[in-house]
Amino acid sequence: MLLLDVLTIPKDDAVAFTFFTGYMAMLAASIFFFFERGSVDGKWKLSLLISALITFIAAVHYYYMRDYYLATGENPTALRYIDWTLTVPLMCVEFYLLTKAAGAKIGLMWKLIIAAVWMLVFGYIGEAFVPLNPDGSAADGAAMHSVIYGVLSTLGYIYILYTAWFGEVKQLAEKTNNPVILNGIKTLAWFVLVGWAIYPIGYMCMPGGWLNTALGWESSNVDLFYNIADAINKIGFGLVVYNIAINASKAKQAA
Ligand SMILES: *C/C=C(C)/C=C/C=C(C)/C=C/C1=C(C)CCCC1(C)C
Image 1 (tube, rainbow, N blue to C red):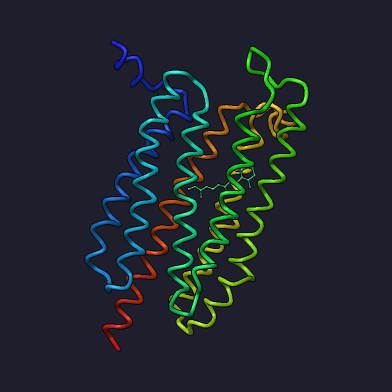
Image 2: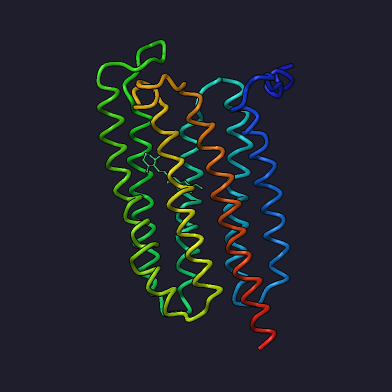
């Protein structure tokens, strides 16, 4: 009986809907990226494997987050951040692999990973330890707490954004002299600017957050924004990498 209860999606629950759709989409994308490793040149196989791992790790977490949300009606904050702690550093590895041909050093990868972990640790403290009343509403100090940790987290985000748009990643992409890689990295930088910016919007829907306080956006919308952003950033990001790999392999065959 419990199983039946857990798996019933209320008709008007958009958050539950995106949890289920997100789960299936992540799983399908993983299978796609994994099998498409066979269609690309040897040096791109690792990039596609990492794209597949990113969506697969997300699929497993969505499997649990979906049930957690349906069973409790609450935000699966811990599962969410465990997922991100694994998948965002893997996206940093993708940036490194793409620029390696132009001489990227392993230090670039670690700098991006440290910035990502910084961003996620402060985001987690901001969300998981926000002062709440017993009924779940924002308690005294919640607004201040969410702003302080939100701003600290954003510093890590800005570092990654800067590196992708103006810093080392951008400079190395130019050095490759390969329009496929240069345009691909430009597209990934747009993902970091626009796709990643959806997450702070979700964050501000939690109790005490600006959008929650000023516009009355409900805290369940945190997950709506996170689920939409994850689909864009994990599957979309992987497809860009796939596109780079396929086109670079074709260009090589033609040469
Ligand atoms: C696959 C998961 C990804 C790409 C997750 C990205 C997450 C972020 C860019 C989160 C950013 C945050 C801020 C910039 C401030 C508020 C707290 C966060 C953690 C939501």
